Length: 327
Image 1: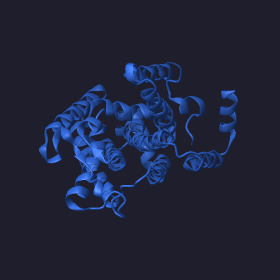
Image 2: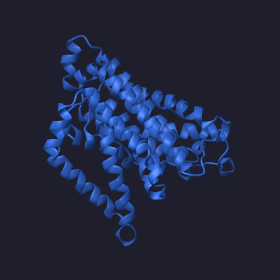
Image 3: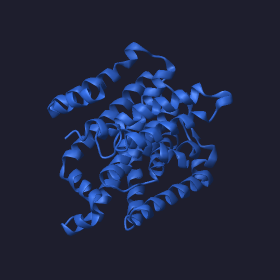
Image 4: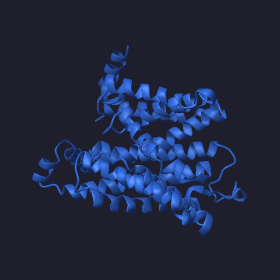
């Protein structure tokens, strides 16, 4: 049956396949008209956030082939910047989340400049070290309240410029639209010369350099775009939970969460993070709540088993395995 679906989809012209994807996405955005259940809405909102984070990592890890283990740093920088600008300086989050993206991009470019001379597992180890440094700083830096984190003032709840909504419906549409916009940006990048250059760097960095590409500069472009997206979604995350602390943003496991999404769906594809988010997040959330109490922690066992099975039977990711690249 899956083979038949795959064949029919691959036989469709590219425009029709993207039209089909658009219909599916519109169906997702219509979910609140069917159910406003708190848990269901929460799962969808987190899925939208991780679409953005997955697309962020996909730029540098999927297209450019640089296996970063430090993207939680940019995610946290964006979230903290948004929160601090709003709470301490009165800057509306409608501006703050984009400012957070720029600050995260600056941090990402600094990290890239320091690590892009390294290759393979050395680069991964360097970015993991950056993540561990970020976690240590986050827990000890008094300016961001250290381990206590920053809590949003509930007196601002529902005010026009606070982006603090009384229910989940506005978050659903706001973050959903941002996830869609990010996916469209990645689609444009995928079809551009930048996307082609990044894929060539991924395939053979030495050959790309010998062909005349400035490999370092293009990796920096990728890191800037990737970090900006991570920062924006860090700001959206902070606005959604109305609280930000190092434990929720800078722990090492957060880096793994971000990477899992495109790996499940298919790295180096536009829709891979979308598919991965809608597989990973529902499994994580339903097992986390269904296996709570005396079974706390078993949810991650279930998630781990699913990841192992996908790695064994669909090593290229679900999208790559079934449909290939949507070019």
